[in-house]
Length: 475
Image 1 (cartoon, rainbow, N blue to C red):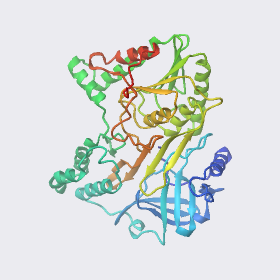
Image 2 (image 1 turned 135 degrees about the horizontal axis):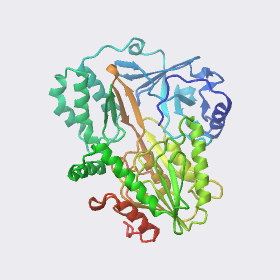
Image 3 (image 1 turned 90 degrees about the vertical axis):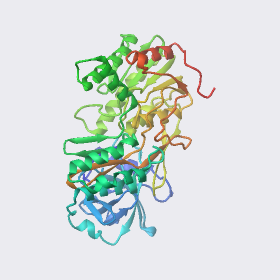
């Protein structure tokens, strides 16, 4: 999910043309209310001018001819957006009910809506709290604002087996005695860590917290301690990562190994089997616009498909992929799809669900595909796993994924504190959520055993290439 600028900017040229295309192909929901562009030429569509609020996300949007001002409201507290909310680009309006649906739009040659829409109702005026600068707050008040935001907007306490009310009671005395913003940050970090949710982040100055540390990362830290290495822990882990990646490359026919999209994707042959590793779903060409980056990714995927045309079957490896963009994941999936299929559904509180379909490139792909995952596989990489599992010729092998699929809801607070919460469910083609639990493979394989942290992955890939998959977990 992109964190964009505060205001919508005028679009022109091919970017504007893509918006026109997008508004013509989306008619989710009511047949007579398809998506339309927020911007008409260089100005906001006049039908949107005014103030709108989405209580489910705490957003207040004030549209004028020049653009949109976004605020974050929590009861009597309101703060202007600091650039964390992406630009709203598409809308769908039901004037009879004063109901407005807004969507972010990923400017690409392939147009999809990859979020549940945000649903707003019209207000008569900007709320009083949003008309004045936010008040100065004490550390206990700052703590309370963040906690109330999790009360209101965070969706997955039950899925992650966290008794949030008990956590608040346990922290109450310390919260009342907080004397600095740093102490607020530290106490919140303690409370949020048990969520084990990689989409829960906080930043304050040069301090950063993420709640999603993986078990593998903890095991690597333990391995570093027991190794007696003089390297810093981070350097030890980075060297481990390099060694694992290089071990797989060595297993490929060297004449077939290629990379593309700034090494986001690489491929080659293991005898008659094609191997594709997707390292990440972002960063495909340094310095290019996002849409041009997707063109670079598409070119790499076309090269991959051509080079592996004679392969009898394929291994697609996202075991070391921590995520990125769902839009990129959908584009990659299209190169393995056999026909148009429902692959995902997005759901969010107070919003209509958003179904996502994949369509194949050219004639489509029907060769057997083994999809390889681990606990490292997270976020957009997990969305990719759900998309691929909707294809009947794909078998999912390896380890259970991380279980962090939700989109991020960013929130700014006083003192420069920023927080992201998980608020949107991503469901598989059968309507099942894997948030907090991870996606279980059909064929279980341990990729990073304690006894062989560096060599387990390449051994598993060799086993798959030889057709020696373990029995199905359903057998």
